[in-house]
Length: 339
Image 1: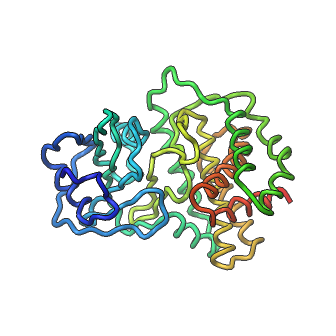
Image 2: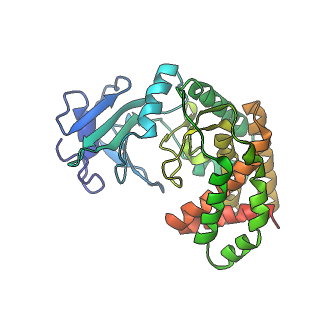
């Protein structure tokens, strides 16, 4: 048990060791927060996910997923709080949250080492199943996603936010544009700089401030929605990796904008990897977004477009910092929208 968290990416058996330890007393400097009882295990076989991700996930006994946070962030973190709230709110359109593992660092800081959630049979990542939908030209799924988003926000709307204040929305968006301009080089950077003022004008509706704010998901894209044998499930409540100290009390439109923007990115993936004609991909994205918004229900329309543009800037930031090959997706959307 004492080896847990030391180097989880290189030593096999740590994830199953954690799951086995959860049924007993966990020794210091570790601590466990349980959200609901774990399932019964028949064995402790392990396998990893072979997908691009910021963290490292291991499936244990085909029943639970242990996600190691790399590197372990200091507490408090969004996911444990949201897990506890969604469990009490009876929200079930997610992988069942079971536990969070923390460890006290030598300086006294509490670090979040791992999250343990249920394994969903037949689960496929959104960057796989949704690209299949785009390639085939199917958009019926978007109605289900709209309902899922509305149900999630209904559950999160009861999360305590008394006394919370939101960011200056315009300043935050303008900062994302400025950073995207600084980090995007070459021909893409030149093109982006030539549209700087046009993009900044998109943010003007944000100067009126935020209304009807709730606790949001914070990183709500199709990659966070699994398609599994039981339907769809939203995962990963860790916040936006491109926003340091991200404020998660926001208008619900921010989550919805991230989700609609990700449909545009799916269209770009279909063009690049599946040979989908650009015109067909654009039509698919427009129809899927319309279906999603219709199913979601009432939303402040003035905020959606500014948040979508800000998200494209954040995608460029993410590409520059973590995944350079991803830059084609946000640039493809921006070039389409601002010819």
